[in-house]
Length: 167
Image 1 (cartoon, rainbow, N blue to C red):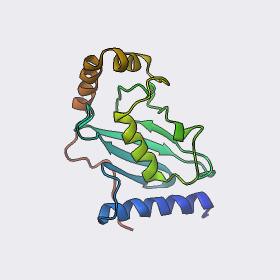
Image 2 (tube, rainbow, N blue to C red):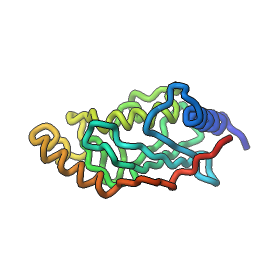
Image 3 (cartoon, rainbow, N blue to C red):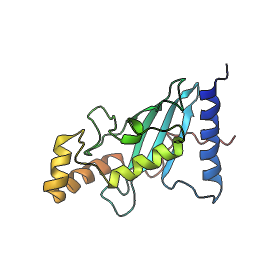
């Protein structure tokens, strides 16, 4: 059965594919696709932004949508280990657009690029990981060292975890 949320997710997916196959203003360093048997469950990859402590990292996420999408945001979690002020131990992300600032105009590409931006621009005043927030504010060198340790664990030069389907 096709519902409005499923139709929207198909549009979001096709839009990501167009970005990947063209030079049309692509969201650099992000990719995502629904799982094989459930359009409401997505797998995604975010590459660490250049010139940041996260550079060279390949971070896996899941996005779980409900039939209320796009009126309600998905539940987004890092599957990859993460050390970041706005990421909880279970991988959940503290990001305003995934909570009180959600808008139906956001699509999957916008969600992923916002998370990618958050990697380099954390909000230590709204911490999900208090140690990461404290180090970010008080000892940036130690914070970056810990991030680099995570990046070394998640480096992936040839990731095949995300199926890129051409529709």
